[in-house]
Length: 103
Image 1 (cartoon, rainbow, N blue to C red):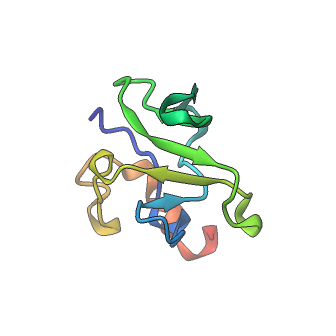
Image 2 (cartoon, rainbow, N blue to C red; image 1 turned 90 degrees about the vertical axis):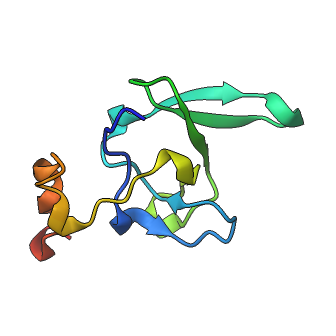
């Protein structure tokens, strides 16, 4: 795991698929997308461009009101950092995302 921020809890939703699902990444350049034709299906794999690790897949069946995407991410690729610990963990630049006037 390379530690770059991928998603926030603000964009998490229950997709009933059993995997953590998000409507969008924190920053578009934190994810690489590649065609994945394994398992007899065609889908878009989401990878870390920094660690070149598999993160999950993105599908176009997410909530329309949130842009229509569903990033279905392996939980092993995620580390939850509480808002009050963002600064201590080196993610101070993202605290503004959780301020009421920015939502």
